Amino acid sequence: MKVFEPTWLVSAIYNISPSDLKHQGIRVILTDLDNTLVAWNNPDGTKELHDWLAKMQAVGIIVMVVSNNKSARIARALKQLDLPFVSRALKPLPVGINHAIKELGVPKSAVVMVGDQLMTDVWAGNVAGVRTILVKPLIQTDAWNTQFNRLIERFVFKQLEKKQPLIYREDLNGNNHQ
Image 1 (tube, rainbow, N blue to C red):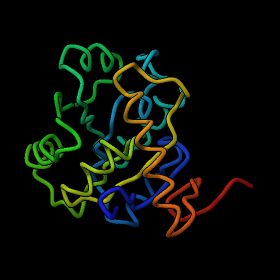
Image 2: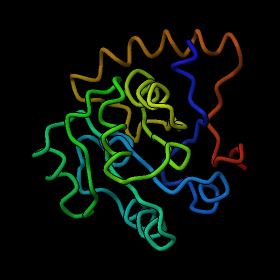
Image 3: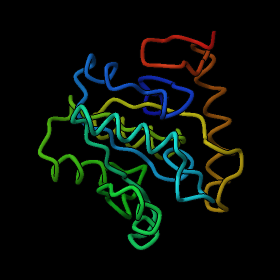
Image 4: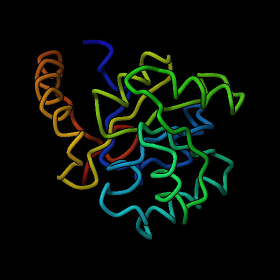
């Protein structure tokens, strides 16, 4: 079950601050696309997303999408965001993550993988040897091809919670809602 354990659980990607990342020595965020960065059915993103990306860019933190989607789908979704990406990442295999790390020329210790699924994002990040952040899905519905993963994920979550409660925090420091 260790392969499914995220380093951190954070309620939303937008709550990950540049200062928390810098404190952890993280210079690169590899992120899933659907339901992590943007809602799977609303690829334009929100003002909150655009503001968060601007904060990351202002301090030199690279944000790169690593997705199992086809290149055309990702390019269409990122058209307004101008982010680099790796398509057909083959998660839960570490192929896409390793490709991104090699392309960026950074050590694994400076990278974090962020995603909304234990069965793809966290698993791939852990196997690749980078730290991982599990976020809550942006919306409660999923594309048809993710629904099966969610079913298995519920079982895995229950197994992980037998060791310790999995509580989503508001930031990497473990703070909760006030």
